[in-house]
Image (cartoon, rainbow, N blue to C red; front, side, top):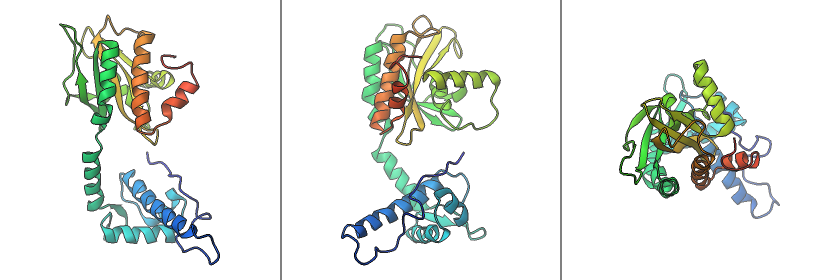
Length: 276
């Protein structure tokens, strides 16, 4: 589901130079607005699975067609967007994908989150994991094993159906509804949204349990999850408030580093980490 982006309204901003007599800072402000508009166009294209025409982009951005078209022409010349020769619609260009790859190389969520995964592992003395969505599945990207002689773990790189794991449901509950879901799954996701943690006991393997919480980015969208995996005697239904607090606090710290305010809003409306 593509959301409508909030950008400066067409009445408030233009790309034209400021009128004579405006403060000296006005040209800089106009330049900032122009750059912001260009990035808004790129973000709208990035969030759409389909190519978009000028009219649809203008509607989503609440801007005039002329203003959006000016930015599309510039971005096309720079290689950041491509235009379909038959439909005249736009999608991200090769340079946007190359830029994305550079960003991925320089910003690694696993590296940012690793110390928090380690802190969760030390506080709980259980195996701690970090997972990210990959289509309808999740990929475990970091694992720190329990120090116990007999441990339950999941190797980094393991791929698990999102619906069948606590790490997956912690993310799925905060994503737009992608279609028909079973009544049992819908109920489980509603519960995750109300308490901000997901638990799975004896679901995929007998005797194995997991507890997870969502990680949010600067748009307050769920982009990952952090959790614990252990014996069903350690993680129970319901899980202990201490474990819930540890997992939620780890998720909050990572989300805060991603400039998210989601967890602050949740805690301000509840009694704090571990509340349900």
